[in-house]
Image (cartoon, rainbow, N blue to C red; front, side):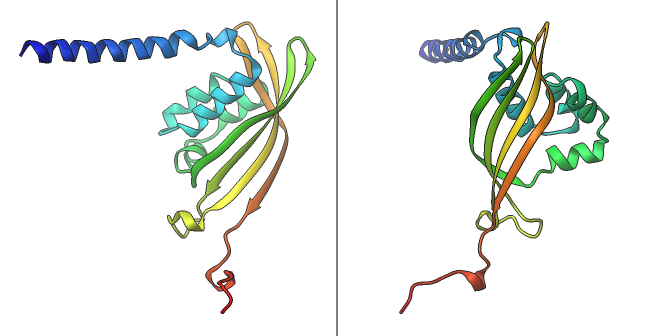
Length: 170
């Protein structure tokens, strides 16, 4: 019985240490760089499970973006974030940053993800989508916030239909 208690205590300490390490090594909200705020916003967006999670996005928004998110109806928000059709985030990268003033910057990032068509849940039918987005950001007393999306380009790589798939030549 004593060994179980000790083992349980060690496992508990390990979880506490891991949690402290993660939270202690991450910068506070006000210390985050503009790029870190963009990444945190995207993590929040890809992690939404319910309409109540809207507040997680609003924490990183200001201006037009804040107005758009706050003003979205429950149904619109649910379709955009909760009942999303994307399956996996393939990659995320910061492409560039352009400082306009000490309190205004633009961050360009690329996302690559897969989105399922409405008629199936089979991953082989998923479209590969690559988006290149630029967001305008303002620095507030509590840190950087995304004001608006000022540029977006997307490419769509659709899977070939069964009839179009090339098979080996005999």
